[in-house]
Each structure stands twice: as structure tokens, then as C-alpha cells.
Figure 1: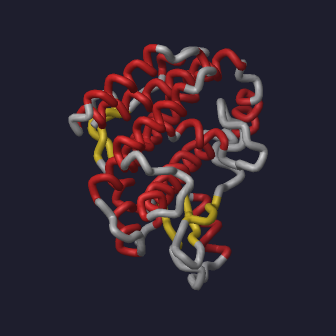
Figure 2: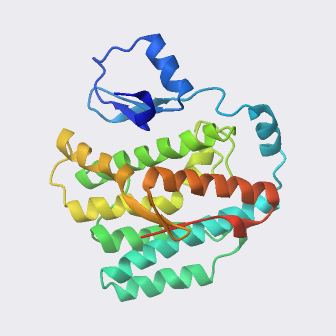
Length: 259
């Protein structure tokens, strides 16, 4: 297997041994490596220090992004996330929930200071998985969602590092214990792809076979700017466009995917 043919490598068993030489080669090729715990759940990932030759310049730029442009970019990202949720409910024939989500979009303030995103999430998940569903419970659905989100987070982290920026400094997320604040921001519009797969799969358990099903998410075909792309390529285009928008102070430059 040629390293150039690998985009993301998941080490799903702690018993696997890897040489430092191989790990160094993987980082040089900018291959995202995800390590799992004894339960085969994502636990950590390998991130190179130098994703871009001018990373020092990029990080300096990142620290000078104004609060205004970060708020406006975050608002556009939240609007797209809720729009994707509304479209999914439209496909499912849930017109009442779709209309409610659309109303949240209409009332979205700059920086989402009134937390329309949080209100939308409650409506969205309850309509998908039932009124008793809670995201913080240990259930099969939540295990599947968390696994899928971890894959998305790693894919976005890879592109952030590749472009020379650091993952700790976010636009909205600002948790001092979260090393991936920026990826947590940028991944938001893609979450619905995980939700769709989990909803349609109707997992009754979440073990190795089910995790392999979710891994195919990264190969999903989407549309970006009128052309078809696999998801990992789409994330690459999207992340680069977000950085262009931040550096040019123009949120309209952000490119979003369609199905």
C-alpha cells in the first residue's frame, strides 16, 4: 500500500505497534492518524507541528483576525448548519420542524448571541430520535453519533494543520481544555451527514461492524461548486475557503457542500 493512497488511517486496537519511522512518514505525507482505545472508540490523533511551510505567518494572521469577522463567519456557518438540518427534516416530511428551524434562521443574530443553534439542535434531535432523546446519555445512537463526529473532527483538524493554522484558537468555541476549538467550529455544517447515516442505519448495537459502516462516511460523494467530490476533498475545499474568508474579511467566500 502506497502512503500516497492513504488519506486517513484509523488504528482501532491498542495492541497495534507502529515504528517511529512509519509515524514520521505518515506525518510528512500529511496523513491523519486516529488512535482508538480498548473499546475501539477514537481517543486521540497524530498532528504534525508543521503543516505548511509558512505556518509561522499563518498563525500570526490567525491571532489578528478581528472579533467582528470571526462573529460574521461563525454566523454564516451556523446558518448553514441549521439550513442543512431543516432540509433533512423536509426530506423526512417533518414540515412543522422544518418551519421552526427556518424561523430560527430568520431570527439569527450576528455571532448567534441568542443561541438559535442550541434551540435548533433540541428541535432537530427530538424530531429525529424521539422526544426522550438526550445527547448526554449512553445510548447506541449517541455512541454512533460521537464516533462519526470524531471522524469529522479529525478530517477537519487535518486540513487546518495542512493550511498552517493551529486548532486551539476557535471562532466561537473557546474551551481551554479543548485542543480542537477551531475544528469544532468548522465541522458544524457537516454534522448532519453523520446524523443522516446514523438515522438511516438504525443501529441496534454499536460495535466493530457498525464502526466500519460509519468509516465509509469519509468516502461519501457530495457537490462543491457544481462538481462532485468525496467528502474528504470537500472538507479540504471548504476549510480553505473559510480561511480565505477570514483573511479577506469576506464571509461570502465560504464554499458549502450540497447533496
